[in-house]
Image (cartoon, rainbow, N blue to C red):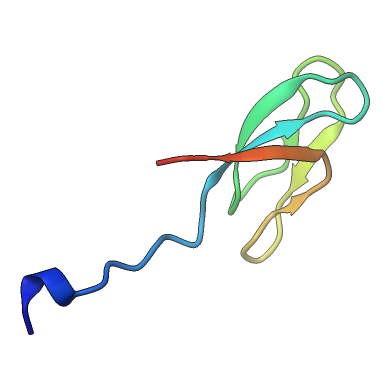
Length: 66
């Protein structure tokens, strides 16, 4: 098989730009986080850990490119 024809898989995880629903503060969160992420200004929960993909409770603005 030629090297040019080998497909490179895209990662399933990404960094997300998330905005707090309560105060509007923006934060960058990993999609598969292993800890709960709180807003730095008001303390509202932005992302809750789970088995694999985190539960994002804030508003997801965009996925940051790699």
